[in-house]
Length: 182
Image (cartoon, rainbow, N blue to C red; front, top):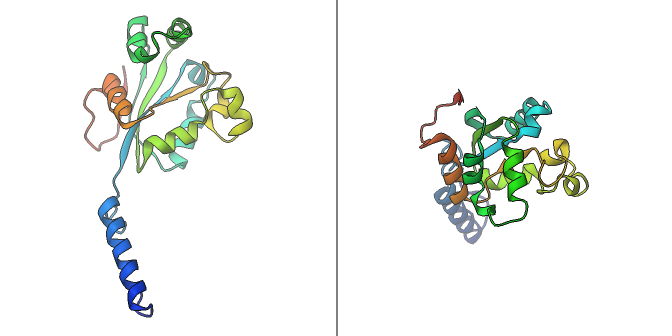
C-alpha cells in the first residue's frame, strides 16, 4: 500500500503515518502477520445433548475463527468447581456445578484477531431468554434456554482465556490444529 501521489503533501503524510501506525500495531496485512488472539470456547452439556455442535462449529468457522484444538471432556464436581471458582460464593454455584457435570462438554481453543471480543459478541448475552430478543442472531439465542442452560461459554478477558485454555489443554502454543478426546 503506497501513499496516493495525487493527494496534497500534508494529507499524504497523514495517510502514511496512519498506515505505519496500523502496520506497527497489527502487523502486515499483505503478508498475513496480523496479530491473532486465542480464547476458550465451550459447548455445554445442553449444546451437546441438543445436537447443536455442528451448527455452532459452522458459525465459528464462518465468523473467521480457526479451531486450534478441541476435546470432549466430562467434568466431575471437583473440576467443575475449580473451573467456576470465581462463582463459588454465589447462590447459583451448586446448581451450576451440577449442571456442568450432567454431561460431556466440548472445549475448543479458538484463534483470530480479537478472538475474545468476537467470541463474546457471537455468543450473546448470558441469559438466553434475553438474547432471543436483544441478540437474535447470537449462539445463545439460537440454542440456549436460560441464564444457566445457555449452551456455550466464552472467556471474558485475556487473563481468563489463558487460565481456561491451560485448565483444559495445558500449554497450547503450537499453531497446529489438534483434535483430542479426553
